[in-house]
Image 1 (cartoon, rainbow, N blue to C red):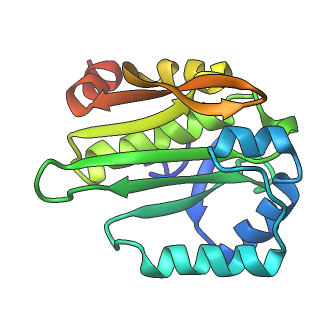
Image 2 (image 1 turned 180 degrees about the horizontal axis):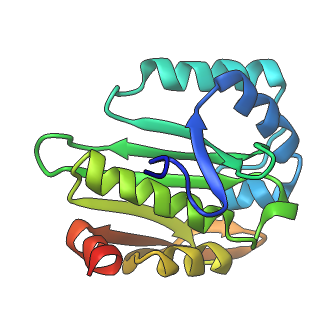
Image 3 (image 1 turned 45 degrees about the horizontal axis):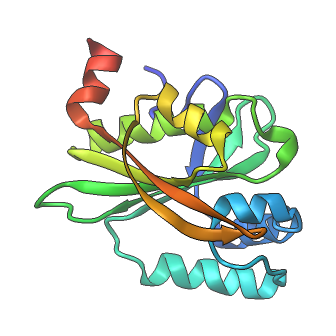
Length: 187
């Protein structure tokens, strides 16, 4: 049997706050990446402050949430991270997913798509979730295409919510239901 956390191009590994923090310090020197990752103003942070942030996030977060590092299969290099924030584990069984590939040299190579496939398999078969949702900014067409490839559907948008470079942008909501995922992968 194939390792549950291994895809075609990447594998998910345990989330190490210190390792990911040091990587983020380098990755977020790229202002385009900062704009893809979040809506806050671009800022440079020290490794020490990032380590503190990630350690606190993992320690204080709901134990039903899941954080993973994304590693390239052939050389085990850290590519980014992915997390699944379970909203209501026993009731509605919904979660939000977040994904980031840090180095622009690794963008557009299918690593994020592969990592998302692994995470959806985990969400729907191991955690028995009903729905996985994400948000993405409309100015990130590469990510939108990647999410569509694995089955996410457009569900809504917050119009003109973000101001970047003097222009207003929408934030898109995309989601996939367990039955849609099962139909695509086991149909």
